[in-house]
Image (cartoon, rainbow, N blue to C red; front, side, top):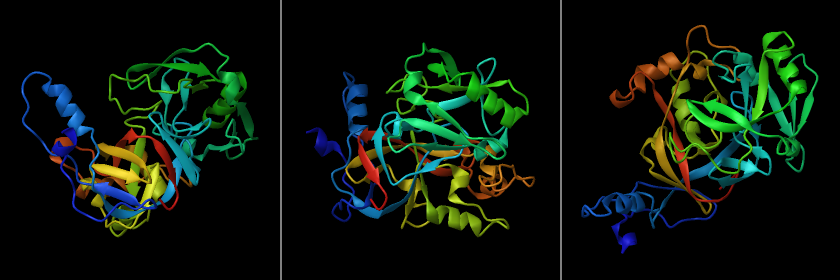
Length: 321
């Protein structure tokens, strides 16, 4: 009976090699007893009919918060976020000596720190302008005792990655041998239940963010200096839908993997950091332009651009899906 409570979205038959979307679920009146549980089940039950919207054009994983991404052709999707073995999204973060995490909002050239992984996705090598490469054996981090870390006011378990990489980061970002540490999240599932059930390891909002190429193309018609999709740090980039079509998607199916819309991605000054130069726009662009036409009263001053997703049916996502 529960499936009959789900509003079906009219459209084309599902295709395996496609990005499919649906409008959402219906609402029903229920009694007081168990009303919350029933409502939650209904809201988290995927639709049965989908329509094709486009295909996955780019997949990005950001191993370290605020640093450069790795572009990849296939990922496994878990509650923690997109991953391939130890290549996982936002599983590392830079902190100061007091344990407070550091982002490119304070140090824009963090975006030029480029992680790379070996073929087995077990060890990570970092490179940055003017620095020798440094390699981290991730499996060894699980042998270390975890300590408390903090992300957006929530306590999370973290493992210190050691003095060598700490000196490397401090030298590059602070031009002195100490001041910053690299921390690792050692769990296979999220420990962050206070903010949102769909929050992953060390992400700001949710463990998946989706973006539409036509959306940034429309933004570029309003800018003197064009920006790329990478300026907005998505996990999935889709091509095919018209600009801002993703605003109305309440369910997304990629291959056999199903996601539910959680919230819009609200943009901050990070948006102004050029991913190729590691500098922030002196003119405040593109955030200034986004605020001129993408603000909504319910979200205050922050413009919405892209959507956050929560995983509902795990699976793999590949380019061309």
